[in-house]
Structure formats: C-alpha cells, structure tokens
Amino acid sequence: MGLVKGKLPMRLKLIHGFGAVAFGVKDTGFQFFLLFFYSQVLGMEASLVSLALLCALLIDAVVDPILGNLSDRTYTKWGRRLPWLYAAPIPLAFAWVLMWSPPGGEAPTFWGLLAIAVVVRILLSACEVPSISLLPEITSDYDERTTLFRFRYISGWLGGILMMVLAYTVFMPGEDGLLNRDGYVGWAITGGSLIVLSVMGSALGQHRLVAHLPETKPEPFTIRACFAEIVEAFRERAFLIFAAGGLAAYVNQGLTFSLTNYLTLYVWRLDTAQMPLLPEGVTALSLYPLALFVSAILMFFVVGPMHKHLGKPKSAAISALGTALFTLSPYLALYAGVWPPLDTALSGLMLLALLIVGNTLGIVVLISASSMIAEIVEAYLERTGRRAEGAFYSGNWLIQKCATGLGIFLTGQVLSAIDFARDAAPGEVRASTITDLIVFYALATTVLMAIAAYWLGRFPIKREDHEARVAALAARQTA
Image 1 (cartoon, rainbow, N blue to C red):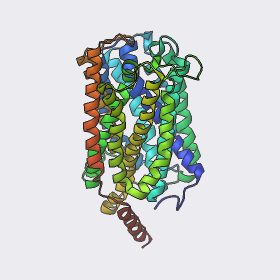
Image 2: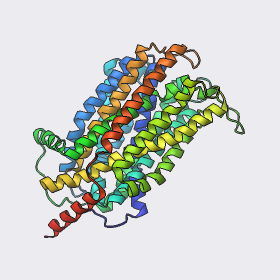
Image 3: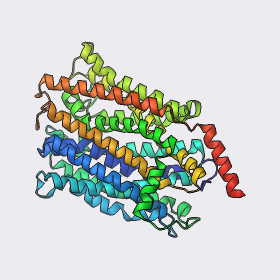
C-alpha cells in the first residue's frame, strides 16, 4: 500500500518533517503576532483586524478543497504533489514580506489587509496540502504514520519557535519590544527565506521516492466533482467525529495563540521578571520560546508511547483534559491569591513550568487528531475504491482554518468589547479589563477542551481496525 514498507529511514523522517517548518513560520506570524502588529503597532481597530483575518480564513477554507482536489488529480512524471511544492513557495515568500511591511508603513484598509492575508494563506495551502497528503502515500503503518506526524509537528514548532526567538531577541528587543515597527520587516524577510528553504528542500529530498506517474490517470478536474468529493468525505462517520473534536481543539488553539502576547505582557508581566543567575536583561519573556521548545521535545517522546499503549482516541481525550488543567491552574491560583507576586522570577518560572506541561499535552491532542485522518483515508478507499488524501486533508484544513479563524475573531471582538486600550504599555491597562480577559480565556478553554476530549475520545477506528483494513486492501490489490 505505501511506498515504503516497514520502518521508515531516519533521513526520510527528517526530510519529510522539514517541509512543515514553513507552516510553523506562518502559524507563529498569524496566530501570535499579526493581530498584535496590526492593532497595537499600526493602530487598526482590533475587531476590524480580527474580522479581516477571519474572512481570509473562510475564503482560504473554501479554496483548500479545490487545491486538495487539484493535487489529487495532478498527473505528471513527478507525481501528484511535487509540482505544487516547487511552484508555490517563492511567491509565498514575497507575499509574506509584503504583509509585514504594508506600503507607506501605515495601516492598510480593511480590504487591503484582507487581500494580502488571502494571498498568503492560499499560497501556504498550495504548499502544505500537497506536502501532508504525501504522508499516507509514503506508509500505511499505524505507528510509522504517528512517527511522521511527530517529525512534522516538531519541525513546525521549531520553525515557529525560531521565529519567536528572533522576534524577542534580534528584531524587536529593547524598551519598545514588540511595538517596534521597523523590526518586523527584517523578521518577515527571514521568515520568507525560511519558508522557501523548508518547502523546496523537503520536496527535493523526497523527489526520488515520490516522483513517478500515478498508477491510474485521474478523471479531469471539475468544481462540481471537487466539492462532491468533499461532501462525500464528510459522510464518513469517522471524519465527522474527528471534525467535531478537532473543531473545538483548533478554536482553542487560535484563541490561545492570538492572546499569548496579551497574556504574557499585560497579565503576567513576563517582560519585567528578571531571571537570576542569567545575564542582565534576560527576562521570563526571553525564556518563553525556550519553554515552547522544551514542550515540543517532550511531545516527541511522549506521543509515540501514548499511541502505542492507549491508542489515538484515548491519548487525545486524556491530553485535552490535561491541557485545560495545566493551562488554567496558574489563573486559578492567581484568582485565589496564592500565586507569587508578579514581576518576580518565581512567578515567571512557575508559569513557564506549567506552560511546558500544558503545551506538551496540547500538541499531543493535535497530533492525535491529525494522525486519525490517515486512517480515514483507507476507510474511504475501502468503501469507494478511490484514494483521496488531498480531499481529506483539505477538509481538515477547512476545519482547522475556520476554527482558528474563529478563535482569532473571538479574541479581537472580546478585546474591543472589554475596551482594551490600543498602544497601551504593560501596567497601564485597567485591572477590571485584565480580569475580564482572564475570565473569558478560562471559560473558553474549559468548554472547548472538554468538547475536544469527548469527541476525539469517541473516534471509531482503532489500531486493530486499521491493520485489518490495510491487510484486506493489500490482498484485494494482489488479487
């Protein structure tokens, strides 16, 4: 069934995963910095920025199935996916830089922001959908698929963390910090270069393995057939259950990431918590990317054993509940008055320690959910006789982008509703506003992760089901 039988070579795992670095660069930009940049730095209304980003995500979500279907139906001597991976990254890099350096250095109109966000997202999808659709083609092994997802996620996280480190320490350090407008230009150029290197480098590294004519020539592309295939994909019971749980997990991710800079600066004051025994100027905020890096490394060693002993559904459910517990515990302690004083090293270190555990479990949830899609591909193949990796993964992106867009949109609307001041320095925001922000975040995270745990825990395809299906399909192909 897969191009590689048995254990995958380490070189292939590294090269395949390296392609996800571009996605990590994009995720860090869109979810951590973009709302902050356009509202706090350029002075746009937060609700207007979040609305533009939501609209861009919704447009991209509609385009994704088209890209996935086109990818499935591409028929060249280089296979179905590689032509996309060679064509899209360079235009994407130019669009990425433009988004962080609007003409004239001033805030664009709503429509200007919407246009550039749509272009960036569509070009990113033209890289990511074909790249991740290679995974079920490479291997049909239950555990090896988890391994490939581990390498994809850790590569994506490392790419995003690298961009975060560069933002805090190289391009936007000092007194103005993230409010330094000029620093974003060099930061964007670096990110664009990394996008090109990761996508094209990964494609070249896999070229010999996947560059061949598909076994059968697909039917011609039509819009009607494209969306009919997506509708049919959503008829898969397993995909609907995944979609319900994944939707909640992705909304929580979008909400959490878009609030990160507000929570770390305005609630926890990590920028003023000086770390002992470290050089002067190293604060808890400087160590925030390191905490994310540690959580990504821990995930790499945790998710495999969890999937092996618990299976993907239980791993996702347990991790979702654990994410909520460790993420919200510092806010509960702060509310109860038992948290150390803010601006202190103890406060910063305790928050980062809990963040490491919570974020590790949060990544396990997303890896478990994403890995479930590979099993749905065989269920669909058994039922219809057709492979449709692009359709299912573009359906996943549709869910993910709508959900994360909704999370960012909710963040912007809440910031406007609680009258969070633009251009406000840390320590200058009203205490009541901070309280409202914490209450919203705590309630939203609790509800969303409970929904994710319930539905992902009910995913119906277990290891034994998948292995039996793969054996039956292989026997049918041999016959």
